[in-house]
Length: 169
Image 1: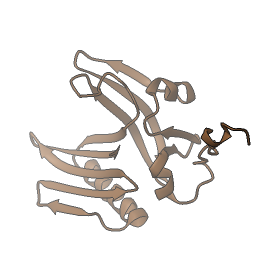
Image 2 (image 1 turned 180 degrees about the vertical axis):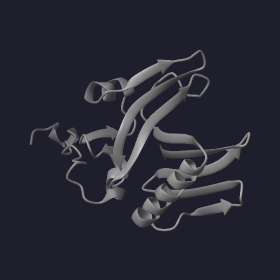
Image 3 (image 1 turned 180 degrees about the horizontal axis):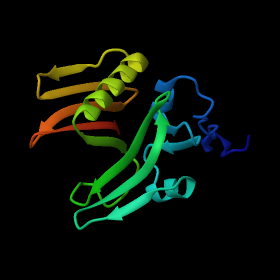
């Protein structure tokens, strides 16, 4: 070791999400699209992610929506994933990967999706930290490895809506 060798950073081995068995460890670093074996690292540029997997980008006057497509995540949960970045957010123009979401609306299908996702998350992570609800609203939340996982079933204008989100905090 030379005189300045003391100041050199030790290079860490890159994180191997594909071979990591503990989903909590994977979530610390990002989201693994299990079916395509593509790892989406928290804080990574969405443009860089787009070079690894197909992303459909839709521009609107007030936001940009990225559609990641249907993928398996969190040990086998199959969802059609997207992310909406609002231009008026503090870092809305930076387009870094901080969250991913799934949403749907309808009648019985939404209730079935809610139950299926809720049961899968409870199997993976245990009971949720927040459990609020009545006949119109159901909100569940898990905080796992610095990631908030939320599941929200609500009714708006007579239509059932479901929103699932994983967000790094």
